[in-house]
Length: 253
Image 1 (cartoon, helix red, strand yellow):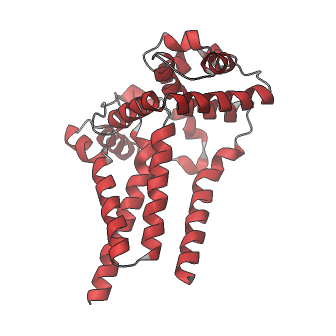
Image 2 (tube, rainbow, N blue to C red; image 1 turned 90 degrees about the vertical axis):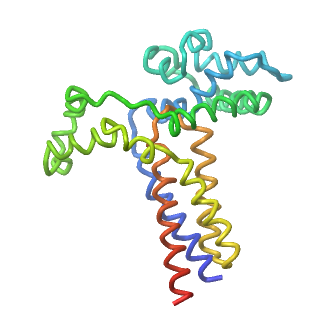
Image 3 (tube, rainbow, N blue to C red; image 1 turned 60 degrees about the horizontal axis):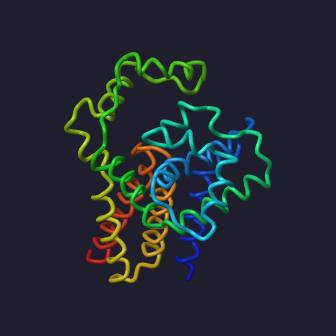
């Protein structure tokens, strides 16, 4: 029981530490915009499909008060619309309208869950197996110079930083297949889950269940086709695998 309690506490502290930073952003409308990024790609796929639902018209009208549906439909993805049409999102919406928007969006997803999951799986595949190599030219690297004014954000070597970024971006195309692919990590996590049951490892069981839940949340809310949203999942899967191997080695030793 003590092991289970310790595991819960560690996981809670870890999640709080990882995600609490976003609540310190006090710029006007920033939290709302961040929330909308999580729904705009699925919403783009939904409004382009043949929708159903008892409250369909009501839900669409409610959503349209926050995000202009006609504007959203014009773009291939919600992500492109988000950056190309700043006025598409109503920054002056009341708290009541925002609350109704969330309820309407959830209702729309529940009534058209097959369409929602089709778009989400497409997003997952684009972010992983069919990852598109971005353009990390020198001008793209220099685009981030606004961070140079931060004292504790200076790279040890600019040339080394550029080389690492180009490698991670896939200029060395051989790196893309294994760096930006969560499929193998999902298999690792499943193995951890099974082994935790076989070896009665409560901590690993809780660890794998939490990660699966995390993966589900990312799958449902990832706002763009960036693999970075799956990095936490990947890294934690590695840690769990090492923990499992060390535990088996210790028991057999």
